[in-house]
Length: 353
Ligand SMILES: [Zn+2]
Image (cartoon, rainbow, N blue to C red; front, top):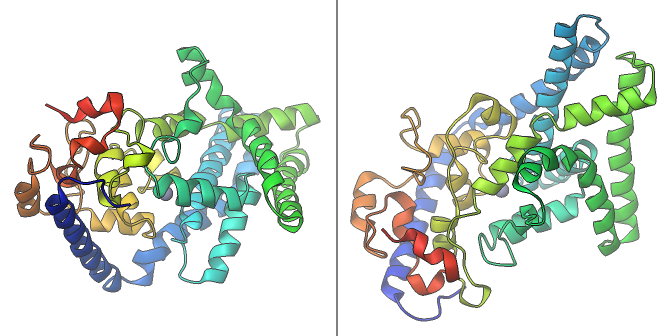
């Protein structure tokens, strides 16, 4: 991932700074307890599992309020297990044991999310993290559907995510070994059928169609923020050409955005996808709680567009690097932006003042 000429000094300086940041983050990790490194996030996931029985029982009620509470519990827990759980498990951020990491990945990605663990790792960890905003490789293009009307795309299409996800998973199984494909099919079926069975036998749904409708509602409860978060974190930011892709630090510095905190999204999606997305791209094996810990000034309000790249650089480093590369007076890791030749086409100009 060498730059194709130009600005070698800035590039070396950026790499040196990344090394320094990595060493500093490692120090913070070493000084943190197991509770901070993994416990907090494991507790959130465990609570989400424990909240499922009351959620299913609430759906027995004739009271519309209790019924709505049941839908809310099941929907939020579904997103916590599938988005936060799958994301952290795929990165191996839930545990330091490789064996348990594999188990959690299969549980969260295949049983809970109805997707394939192999493709989740390949698509997210290898491609999206490895080639963030590199055109055709890690550029979030799976989320672009220009054929759809904007209102259909923003408001109706997200509702189809729970149906499309297992269909895409089955389509991807053509590329894996038969043994792996059978395991994935078994675990996806287990996850879908167990929810269906619980709705009929615990929640007391009278017909298969009402149980299936309830599954669709709970599984698409937070589908809109899920789709929108996926779009706004990367799309619209500078893109890079595959033949002139810059160093990793440069890809991370311009192609990733932190969003403002929101309690329900912090809980269900995790800090690494919301307010600490830059930190997550720099240090993908950190858990949500550790991403928050290495991000300074956490209690101060964050304005996403005005100050999107707040990060672990201190003020002095930011000032030293601000404007050095692009001359735009940017803050944080934005100061490590690559020289213009690395930016592809139409979006390059967006970083200019
Ligand atoms: Zn990630």
